[in-house]
Length: 183
Ligand SMILES: [Zn+2]
Image (cartoon, rainbow, N blue to C red; front, side, top):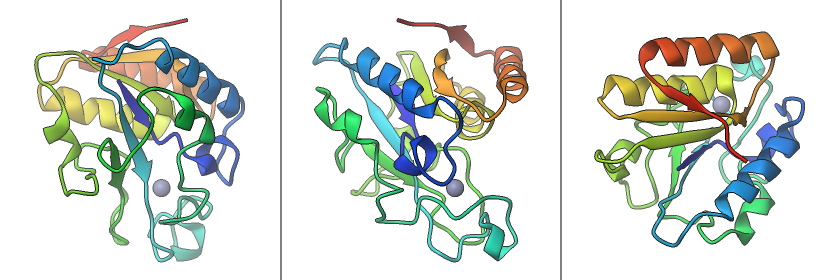
């Protein structure tokens, strides 16, 4: 299970879509039903102040997920689950100022392990998180392109617009992802 960008800025902060807290709580609930053998990974958008995606730097987004800030931290609800975020299972992306990076494929953890290297190729990669139209979509497409079997739980993905969500799901289906609903 991969929880994409479940960070305060995308849940209650500067770029939070509607119903994001509701989705976050649903993901927490889902994780609470996993077993010790299940694997959970988290990804984090992790920017410097000079990142090209920020409006003030010519990009299209409000300033968000500044490295080390509260907004970049993973939503507090996840600290209570068995597979809670830690330096090993959390992978940070978009650290280079000159590059947008919606996909978590090349994100890395504290030890420098790349996200895609941490995944097991023999099992489905299940994706949930924030948000359908950007980081979930691009992460899933990159994983599919690299040969992973991807499942996206559509009711555990927050989105900016319903149409954008539907369009992202269509792109995912067309690319070969399996879509599912849980809980
Ligand atoms: Zn970002």
